[in-house]
Each structure stands twice: as C-alpha cells, then as structure tokens.
Length: 151
Image: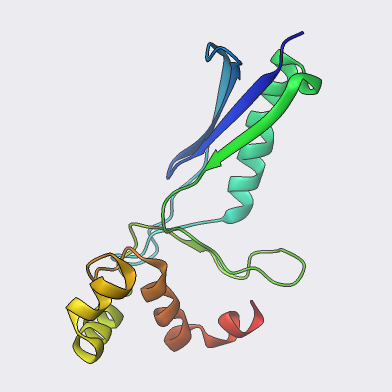
C-alpha cells in the first residue's frame, strides 16, 4: 500500500481532513462543522473543545477509509490569529477569540496613540487593527486578567 498524507484545514466554520496519495491525487475527505458564537456586538468566539471533537471525527473518517497505518504525515492550517488560553492540563480557560473579533478596537486605538501606527507596522509587519492576537491579549489583560494569569 502506498503512503498517504493528510491535510487538515481548520477554518472558521469547519474542519476538513483530506487524504492525498504521494502523487497528489485526493483519496478521501471528511468535513465536520462547529458553531460560531457572537455573544456581544463585535465579539466572535468558539469553544476549542468543539475544534478538537471535529478534528478527531474527521480524522477517524479519513483514516478509516484510507487505513491509518498508511498515514506518514499530517499538515495543519488553522484560522489565522484565532486563539484560546489553556491551563496547565491543556484545557481551555476561555472561549477562543476568533480572528474576526473586534472587541480590542479600544486597545488598538490606545496602543496606536502611545506607540505610533508606523512603529507598530515596523515592529509587527501589519498595520494596527484588531485582527492580530496581540490586541486581544491586551483586552484580556484589562477585562479577564485572572484567566490570563492562569494560562
């Protein structure tokens, strides 16, 4: 039996696992969705446990079709600047803050005023906006310091 490589695309709405032969031919794919929460204007979150459950379900489907012993590599892409905080046991402390979340707009404005937009772009390679996790971490430091301290 030939070797198989699995590509994982964990996007904003679902995880997709695709098995490929060495020649690049797609052998099988599975897709598992997970919910998106919008608990307040500009706040977009997910439960990281849903990511894990969806990943395992998709991988089981793919491995079941192609044979898990044939898998020689797995590559994973995830949703940009999305993150969660985890405790020492690897359990999420907060809902994941998604890349499209805008709760940190005040932190972006404050840091831009304090440091300068050009300095931020020079340092980070990106213009100041709420997408980079740095600003959401600043928001957490102000609004959820206990969770940040436990991470």
